[in-house]
Each structure stands twice: as C-alpha cells, then as structure tokens.
Image (cartoon, rainbow, N blue to C red):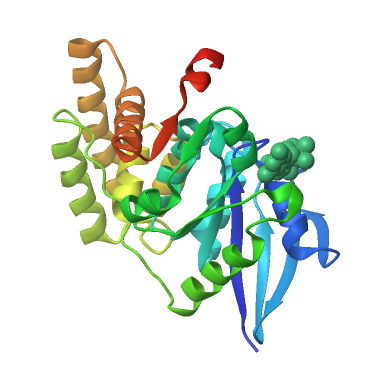
Length: 282
Ligand code: GDP
C-alpha cells in the first residue's frame, strides 16, 4: 500500500505543531535531518484506507538559503516532492504569512491552506472570506482552530481529495517588473533547454535563485554545469548592476516587492474585512 507524502509548512507560531499533533496524535516520531541538528518530525494519518506520511517542516518566514531551517524546508520540498503541502497560516496576520505560500507555489508544489487562528482573528475584528481566497489562489483554504481541533476533518478531506487527483501544478508565475522579467524569461529558457538542475528545481525557480544570488543554488549549479552556471551568473550580474545603478536596490528586494504586490491584490475587494474596532486596535 503506497504512502502519500504531505508536508506541513508555516511561519513560526502559526500553530503548525498544534495542528500536526491534532492530525497525527501519538503516531509520530522525532529525529534529525542527516548531519544537522534541525529536528525532523514525522507522523502518520490513515483515512478511508489510505495512508499519509506527514513531515513537519521547520517553521520559516521564507525559503531563502539564509538559515538552516529554510534550506531544510525547501530541500525537502524540492527533493521529496510531497503530493501537497498543508500550509498553516495565521489568519490574524494573513498578509505576512502568505509570503511563504507564494514561495511554495513558485516551487510548483500544490498547497492546502489551513487558515488557522480564525478565533484570534475574529477576536480582533478580522473576518476572512476563505471561499473567495480559495478561488483567487486556485487552492483550497480551510478555516481551522488547531488548539480545539476545529476544521481538522474538513482539512484532511481536502488534502486527500487533492492527493488522490494527483494535482501537479505549474509553478506560480509572478510578474517581477520590467527590469527583471525579460531576463528571467531568457534565463528560464536557457535552463529548460539545457536541463540545468531541472530534475530537482523548476527552471524559473532556478533562474530566480540566480537573480537572488542564492549561495546554495549557485553552488549546486556550478557543480552540475559550470558553463551554464557562468552564463546565468553573467546575466544575473548585469541585471543586478542595472538595478543598483537605476533604483539603488537589489533584485532580491524587487522580487520581494512584487510578491507582496501579488498578495495585496489577492486580499483586495472583500477577502479580508476589518471592523472599525480592528483598525483601532492594530
Ligand atoms: P508553531 O510554532 O507554528 O508550531 O506554533 P504552536 O503550534 O506551538 O502554537 C503557538 C501557540 O498558538 C500555542 O500556544 C498554541 O496553543 C496556540 N494555537 C495554535 N493554534 C491556535 C488556534 O487556532 N487558536 C488559538 N487561539 N491558539 C492557537
């Protein structure tokens, strides 16, 4: 009987551990990722004769190479390609939490959003239209209160339905502005044509990482094909110099701005409703 791999991802304090415990109960074990001290929690969940293996990723705000936790999280997503990610987001801090969601989608991994802490959000006068958010994202969004186990069954039904349909998705394609986009397209084409790291990472994602000067991917790229890597670096370098000279900024910052722009647009027009009380409080 085959086991379906599901990863849990989310910001620290989003309630990820609470939800993981609620789903897997006592059926979990804790180890370490090979060679490092980051804790690896795994658990199991059976439903309708199917068996899920859940991996609890380290809590992170992003998927850069700056911290060990982020590297561990994205390497697991890239190498083990879970059928889906349960992305736990804090409903009372949605905009910031969705930054990680966007990056998971840029990797081409399907997500089921656990819109957690809806009780806290409500207490602060924040109401979120989960249905509308799901329609805009193109992925399920299930409100949960992990501490009370609320929403767990609906969440897991969505996860299983999704895993069963084997929902492979194209990586989310964002627009990163006139300075970055043409070069990114060009780099993406070169990467796809040469098969550069394509067994692990989507081509556009690798191109983005070259623009972000991501050390880990640059090292992997150099090892895989120094010639292609050098050409990509040259292209990335030219854009970086241009952006420094004209905008006094870096590709990384521009890319982050556009991700936030996407999130702002996603939440516009009724997805988040705040009572006047919420504005007074926050
Ligand atoms: P993690 O860092 O994402 O693993 O977060 P935890 O699971 O440790 O949760 C952080 C805190 O939030 C704990 O005190 C939890 O009991 C609490 N918590 C988790 N989910 C909810 C929720 O839906 N509502 C409320 N009110 N508290 C929650």
